[in-house]
Length: 221
Image 1: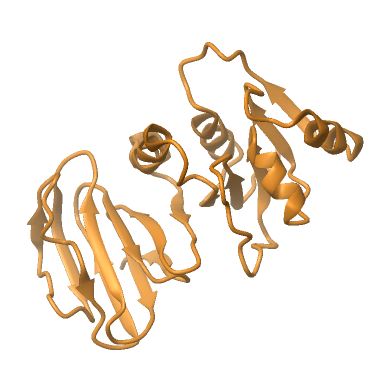
Image 2: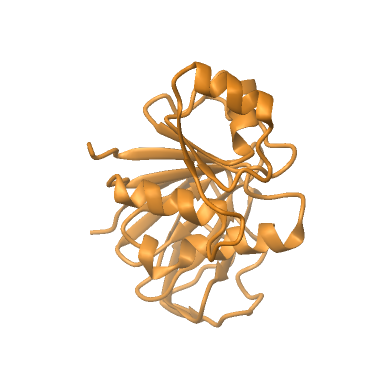
């Protein structure tokens, strides 16, 4: 299996918006019903993975006609379709993963999809969920999140799975200097950019950053 540096995964959440521009350098995975969004965006995924419960038969037929590979799992399984897709991306050596169609619809699915990328198993990849107005970035130690926007743009920082320690920011109205954010703490909510650039880093834990689209996770140091 050839390593794939960037993978885009499309879930089955309703109302998934076509990314603009499309990440043309990505290898695409449709998580079950996300295949319909792929087709509507003009994207032919390299793989459709899941249990088929949200996959339109006509969409499946069209993708098979185009030579797309399918990997089917039973409905009674211990992992969601998104988890299977993330595992596949990591198995292919993905260094960067874009998530689309993972928020909206059922609350339980949306919450699980926010928590899932914080698992230690996915620490090797830079994971983000690009959006039109806001994007989600799962930030880990050793990486610097660089955000571009304008003064007044909202940036929220939410610890996942425990404390986020030694959190340091720049370019935000309420700066953090090696501060600890506890799990469930709202202290990191609704900060704002003071200029056109802001950065976030931490030394331990996992931080969900919600901010303007187009951010980059860079090697820190």
